[in-house]
Image 1: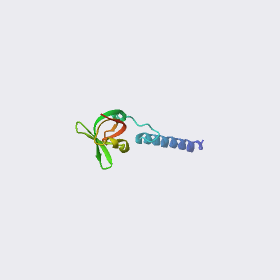
Image 2 (image 1 turned 120 degrees about the horizontal axis):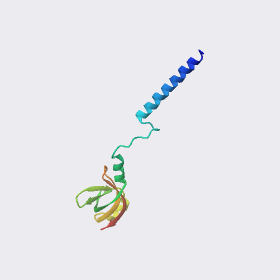
Image 3 (image 1 turned 30 degrees about the vertical axis):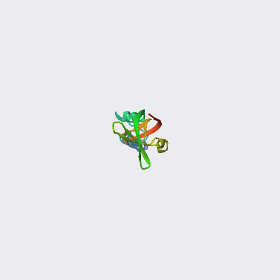
Image 4 (image 1 turned 120 degrees about the vertical axis):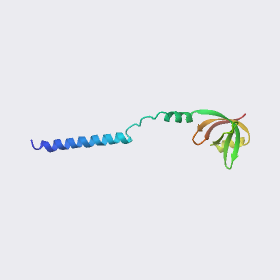
Length: 112
């Protein structure tokens, strides 16, 4: 009967340590625990991923190109080779907007 007490003590200690590790992992959001969604986080990402149409004049700034809209907003364009023939021309660009960088990923460009 005395041999069972150390085994029981070790089992209780093992369960307690396992529970502590599991609770700590939940609190830290380890790689095996899914993170809860933050309201608005996915909304911002989905808005950036949707394509939109932009219209304005292509301007050169060194090696880079940008689009100036009729309202005066300026957006950087990511595809210099594709945009270069349209320098100083009015165009309609279909692309996705990265709002934080004010960068348009050009999908299609055409003269207006």
